[in-house]
Every structure is written in C-alpha cells, then in structure tokens.
Amino acid sequence: MANIKSSKKRAIQNPKRRLLNRRYISGSRTAVKQANSAIEAGDMNAAEEAVRHACAMLDRAAGKGVIHPGNAARRKSRLMARFNEARGLVNA
Image (tube, rainbow, N blue to C red):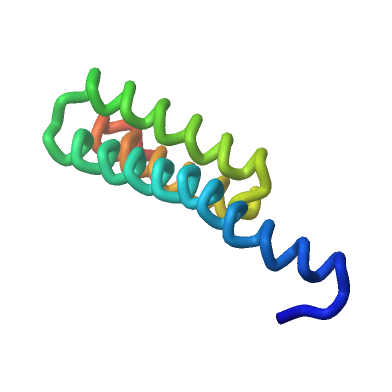
C-alpha cells in the first residue's frame, strides 16, 4: 500500500475511473460493431444511422480523454471508408 497521502487517494480513484472509462470504451466498440454489421447487411438507411451513432460515441470517448483523439479519428475514417464503399462512393 502507498505511504504518501496523494498516492493513497490515487489508489482509490484509479479503479473507479477505470470502471467509468470502460463504459465509453465498450460503448464505442459496440457501436462500431453494430455499424459494421449494418453495412454488411446492406440496409443503407440503418447503416447510416449506425455509423453516425458510432462516430458520436468515438468522439465522446476522445473528448473525455478515454481514447486518444487520433485513435478515434482513425476508427471513424475506416468506418466511413467501409460505409462509402458499400454505398458505391469509392474514389477510384
């Protein structure tokens, strides 16, 4: 156990923060998986809604510092590329 008061406090705070952060991490992962499955299903209206939701979840996680902003941007870019490819909007 820690001896310094601030590190004792940190030892208590860290598990609480980790549990709160898991909500944003798992929520964004689930949203991306749902968007990918909607894209594969071929229903573009549902896929568009799912992609928007996934992008919002990734932005929220990045805004709270749970994931790196570049990580969120990369995931959104890959998701949008898949979505645009399914819609036939690929740049040749």
